[in-house]
Every structure is written in structure tokens, then in C-alpha cells.
Figure (cartoon, rainbow, N blue to C red):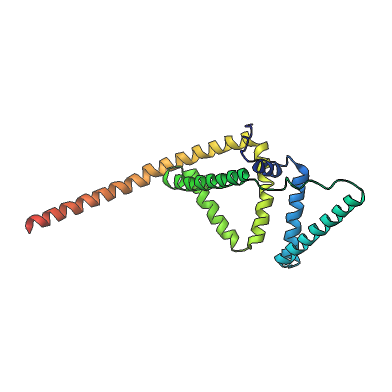
Length: 212
């Protein structure tokens, strides 16, 4: 099983650990919060801004009570100097977003330009399936489904990575044989007919020029 490479951003490492359930408490917290948000907005039809306002009020009241309790107990208040976004972290995040965007663009051109039938069919099929699913669900439901899948599929993939890769290679080889057979039996005949038609048209045009 391949080892996971270290990310240049600690935040990305934390997110990866959460989605891979390496930090079970944080992963469970994300799952509970996303489920509660989906239930409040979809089932009970609360407004998004209302839920955000309630959540902000809960956080502010909790911090207020906690701060007063700390002072009553005679303890030192927490140091808030560390609660800042450094310029270095901002630059690294911007560079990471830029890298992801560039890789996404390269991947789209690579799938469209290269003769990898498996990647092409998988991409087109996935986009078509997503467009069909989007007709029946709103954005919030899709986001919640994405979170659930993001916290389910990666751990399963990491656990069975070797088996999935072997199965993937077998499928690619089989699709490659189908593509080569299709290219030999159909595409080459079409190219030959098109070439013959073009040659015949050129010959007729040359004859017409001579008669003129």
C-alpha cells in the first residue's frame, strides 16, 4: 500500500486526516455538523441565514460564559495572539489553489486529446451522471452527499488500494483491446472511404479544369 505524501500546508494534512478518519473525533464532528445542517435546512425548512445566526450566537455566548468562568476561577485568560492567518499561510494556500486549477485544466486537455478511452469514458460518464443527478437534488443535498462520499470512499480506497489498482489495470487493458478492435474495423474503413472520396472529388475537379 502506497504511503501518503506530506502536504506543504498543515491545513491540507488535517483535512486529509479528517476525511480518512485518522482523527476520529474531528471526523465524527464534521459528520454530525453536516448531518444536522442538512436536516435543519432540508427537513425542517429553516433558512440558511437563520441557522448561521443561531450558530454564531451559540459560539459567542459560549465564549462569553467560558471567559467569565475563567476569570472567576482566577485563571489566566487564553493567549489569542496565535489566532491569526499569517502571510506565509495565505501565500501557500493561494499557490495550492493555483496548482489545483492548473492541474485540473491540464487534466481536461489530457483526457480530451489523448487516446485513453478508459479515462475519456469515465470522465464523460461521470459528468453525464452528475448532470442527471443534479436534476433531482438541490445544491445542499449534493454538498451533503459529497461530504458523505468523501468520508466513505477514500478510506475504502486506501484500505483496498492494491486490489482496486489491479482491477483498474485489467479494465483498462480490456477497454484498450475493444478500442483497438473498433479502430481497426470501423475507423480505418471510414478513413479509407473518406480518402477515396476526396481523391475522386479532386480528380473530377482536375478534369473539369482541363475541359474548361
